[in-house]
Picture (cartoon, rainbow, N blue to C red):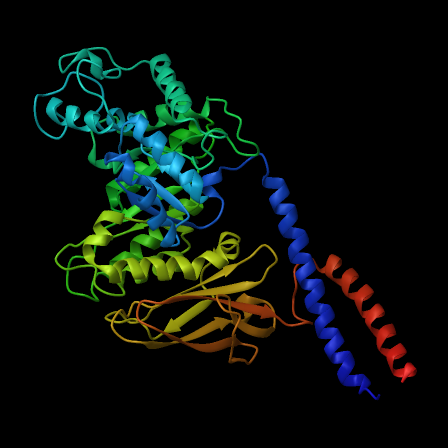
Length: 494
């Protein structure tokens, strides 16, 4: 047997380098995970592939089938709207069976939305509307929760101790972990900027009450609330006020920041530029407060929108902006749109599920990447650069062309990148992508199908700038010594 020593050593060197590099990734990943233990919410771990439904309003005999259908779509979280407490308890039991997570809405959404008495008789904030909302949660006169038990002409605002009592009763009644392991949060507000005056302060008070409840949850923080903000200026202002007040009161940050974005109303292919702009704005709000952002795409018909490929385009565009998950709105309206809508939900969920951990570990870094092509009716698609904790760069591509396949032409600034590239890899399937690296820029092309998105890794080359150099050099030194010795012994044994 005869080996070529020089080619063998090149192979050993590359293998040893990659082994050492991946070892550093694992060491740092384990370190970051251990540092986070005891200071995290279950809801903020992993990319949310959620779906909203109103199933708990219906007959409990259908819950099992509904939950199984949602699981079949590849969702990992169910955000259930409304339903009396016994219905929610049964619904949670069915979700427990699947291993999915659940965020049930709670009756305090009525108080956050509608406020304290007195109330007018009619209108969005009127007594008749209040009774309709409360009925969704199983409350009817005379058995109403405070402060509604005073009737429309009451004068006593809900006190903190009364609020905390309701929260304690609610938490115990829904039986969170260990009774319902699927329960990871409580949906308590919905588009608050459209609600009564003082809504943000009521959100803060409910959040504070939940944070004060002590529940055994292993490594996780006490339970808390979440909700969905409007995408527009009013929604952004409400989110900032809420998060600022939480910081002022030294409360734990909410687990996630969710916003809906229902801007698709013209002909197919339009409005995606607006959608991209709002995704960027909301990503930056989340970055400012260090909270993962979840998008609620438009999954219902407004003037024939969204059309085919626009559901997945919305999801990928938000992820490419830096969002950390999707909460599809909603099961019932998606079903009404047709099987193609559910197929797109299933496709996106299946595509991003296996790379969830990678996405959660990325931080966006702007200004070093450009793209041409895949813009549809706009100049170009989306290409943003991200960096993981080990210094490796990624590019998240998303097409705004929902009609035709297209070629995205990507250029990454070499100085901004800071290292030579060994390989360009499609993270979803591990395929290598042809590229050029002239020292000034790394360039590559990628063919995207209509509305598609893709996460691409720029793998560092040995000899390039690698973070944690002292650890890496020590590992490389040991591995190269062992590899060299092994290679020479193999040659001498021949």
